[in-house]
Every structure is written in C-alpha cells, then in structure tokens.
Image (cartoon, rainbow, N blue to C red):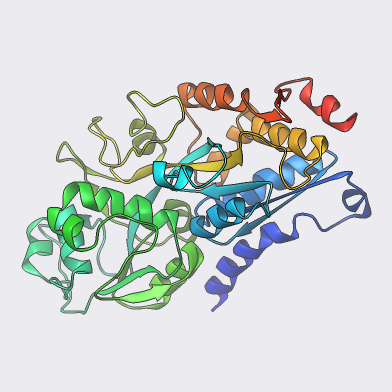
Length: 361
C-alpha cells in the first residue's frame, strides 16, 4: 500500500504547485492545464521550477489525454496536454490548435513475475495475450524466444487503461503496425474495447495494479516503471532487435523527418537500436489566444511558459524524472509554431522580451 500511495501522491502533487508560501500566492498570473498522466512527473517538476522563479502560478491536472483535449475544446484551461496528437477530424471541430512537443518517453510492457528476468516479447505475443489466446506465462510461444528462462505455470493477468488515454493510443498504434489481427479486432485509439483483463485509471493506477498483482502484465508510461523499479520487457523492433527502453534507444526512434506541425507517431521506427514504442508528448494551445475573454497577460504568459519548456533549463530536467529531452530539430519545429501564436490577430512575443511584455499589458 505504501508504494501505491506514493503513486497517488505523485498524481496529486502538481495540483499543489500553486500552494505554498505567501509569496507564491501573490503571483499576478495563474495558468491552468490538464491532460495526460504520462508526462505528469515531468510537468510536476518543470512547472514548480518555473513558478519558483517567475511571478506565475501553474496548475496541472493529470486527468488523461482525452480529458485534456476535452478541457481545451471546452475552453476551460489555458493549455491541454496529450500523448496523442489531434486527428484531422478532431482538428476540424475546434479553432486552430498547435502542438508543442515537450519531451520524449516510451510505453513499456511491465510485468509482475519476480523469478523471471530479461523477458523478451514480440508484437504477436503481446497481441495474443490481450486477445486471450495466450493465458499462461509458460506458453510455448513465450518460452521459444526466451531460451533458458524457466516460466511458472501461472495465469497472465492483462491490465489496461479504463480512461481515455494517450498512453493507450501510443501502445495501440504500435500494436496495429505489427499485428494485423490486433488492427482488425482492437485497433488504435485512446479508448478501446478489451476482451480480457483488468482496468485501471491513469498510469499510476496501471503501475499500482501490476505491482500488487502476481502474474500481472500491462502497458505503462516508462517513467512509472523506471521510478518504481517495475520489471519490463525487451520488445522486438522493426529490424528484429530486442531492445530495452532507455535514453539512447528512445532518442533513436526520433531519427528521420518530422512534419512541421510535429503531428507524427514514431512507434515501430526502422532506425537501428530504436525502442519501438517510443513517443512524444504534446502541450496543445489555440493558435489564436483571444477566446472566452482571455487577457493579453494570460496569452503571453502561456507562450512564455511553453517557450521556457523548450529551453535548456526545462529540457535538462527531463532525465531527472526518467524522460528524454527533445532533439534539436524537434525544438526548432516547435519554436516555429509558437512564433505564429496570436492575440486578437497580432503575433505574441516569443523569447527574451516576452516576460516583460506580458507583465506590462
């Protein structure tokens, strides 16, 4: 229970960022965001660091990527956050939205099987587990690619997300690329219909369920597995390599071209040594910041915060909480998008002059 409590505390910690000393409560500007639990540990650290050195309160609710997108669509937050970019269909239902990547991470396949180390898995085996075709840890298909490992005759208990989740989208995007049967029966999405397993809410919930359930198996944001020291599998990539998720293998997944709007998935990368379920996570904001009576100060403050997130101080924090910093080319694309943000049709200031500009308007 102590471990689960620590996960729950991590989830609510960001909501407390705006609390503390009287000095912080006197801030002239407050910004609010909501969205994915995948980047929650990083956002907790980054937003607190930002507000400690700026006259700004930043609060963030880890309610899942689906909830973050709804909150932005309903215009009740300054920014949303999602591990799945908006589709063209979703974009068509909203005012123009820009996607700003903030860091990289991965989805890992975690498991609770203390006697098994260095587990290897393929997309087909993972699909068979979630489709209810492989039900025991000593199944011949698992044993065949894990020579020398002794598996118990123990039931596999799959765990999945109950909420609308960018982590689910990333995982299912990879699975649809490597398993035709998965693509045809389960598909890709933030919310899916599962035939077997246990549901848990948020990455902290999935991680907690796996840690407490003997024989459990499930997909979870890599930072939760790393921080809680949950065992996770090596996954076969597009080149047939079994790869462990780490800073190097996740970074390799970002090699190659990227669209200017940064909306792309990097799962099942063909780069040598790439971990195949790697991903970006995004902050989403409206390109035109004048909506629902927002002030110039709110608009400029939002741009200032996101610009800082792309800078060396914030990017330098990523690895402290088990994430991966953005490649330079991705930051350049993000900065170019940020430079197009407007307030009442006028471009907002991005860069060194932005802070003073916001506080004088």
